[in-house]
Length: 325
Image (cartoon, rainbow, N blue to C red; front, side, top):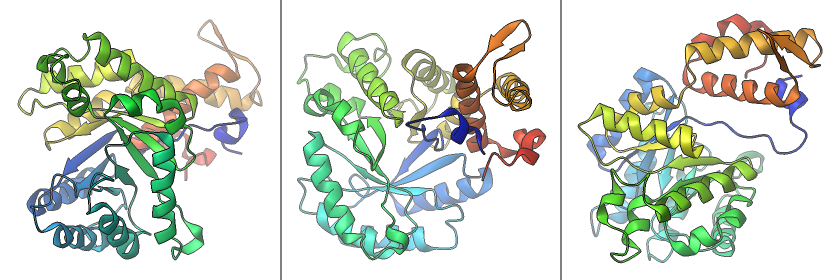
């Protein structure tokens, strides 16, 4: 049995790559695929139909996205798609095109501008209708953008929807949606200090962790300073419990992956503790003067799950245990 089967009686938290790289133009989408093939599936790519499509060429852009996802260059099937706002006339065409052409290969669908759990359920039902032809009754994972006060007010109910895999904080839309009541600086350097923005970050993260979903932190608009990207990532991870972050520039990807990935010391400690736990048949153990039981075992198992997502080579010491697929 795997540690997940032993340690979790109810909700088993999912792990997906810690970085979500957004791109929308043909050149940038192809560059992102090349980079993913070079680095491995330690980050996801989200092809953007909402902001990436030239006006008047929405259908052509959706078809291009499908061609890229279906191409041999998509080695890992870790590319998702952000569709148009559900109120847009292009939303249904986006969904039909993606699901019919690459429903079996797309990693997830991102729905922006959500207002409530009921709306989200209705939209997921539409997506599932178009996905009925997929093999084995596959249901495409859904990522939801939380970027309005209405969505924030219903965030726990949204996170509770079974098919929802990830909630992403849309910081810039959230701030602009206050019509000047929150200063523009809260879209960047002051996001971790403004009370309303901090509250939103906490609510989204808490909702995700309640239901075993992935909280994804918003974009960092600074594409020149590695220090700012790293600082934003570490604050989101260590102070707000986020386990994933957007990227909008290739330089941000390795910085986000490094910041959100377990350190070598954490991985080593987790391996030692869990191998002793196995020897003790998952009973309480002592390690370096501290007592550990199933509660801490769960914590260290999640460390190894995250490490497996980012650098499989670091886990060669426990390959023989067959814990990872």
